[in-house]
Length: 266
Image (tube, rainbow, N blue to C red):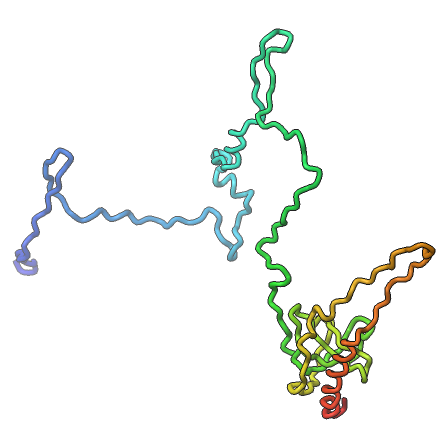
């Protein structure tokens, strides 16, 4: 009839369905395609986020929503707790005779009969920190050989000195010179000085090699021993500058003074 669509015969050949084997060994006809999971709503949190890091409900309000009070947890015992259970301090043993009480508690680990009179020195844990002798000696970028420094503490505070070199202990070797501001060759820490922009050229100055930390170490002054007839003699040994120190001071200052005069306004 007119207006009715004629159905066309299917020209494509149908693929034979694959056969599946059940547990009994019988083959069943079916499709090899895996079952597609059902699509549903994605899982969302019980505590909706208002702002990043802040939820709508507080922690106490979320406990009844999660039914935390119904859950029972049994935490596993740690190694320390297991060891404590195994180690026993005492053991009860039966004792004959009724007058002795029947049982007696015996210590498994007895205390030593004798204890040392002096404590054995133990090395304290330093958390893998190196001693001061192995520390890296750093120097400020503003402090270079020949730069003028201002000393802050001590009897020479406010005086300007010339920086010569850094010693092995990290201290700075400076000089006044002594002829200008009465500051001798001495050591100072770099946190107790202020570096200025003024510098002088000391590349040609020869500094004695024996000017080290041992050279500046002071000797301990001792009281003289009392002898017969000198009971009230309590005078201490006075510190005196050695001749070697005077020679080294003069040798360094004679080289630095012309360098300072070459710089204007110094």
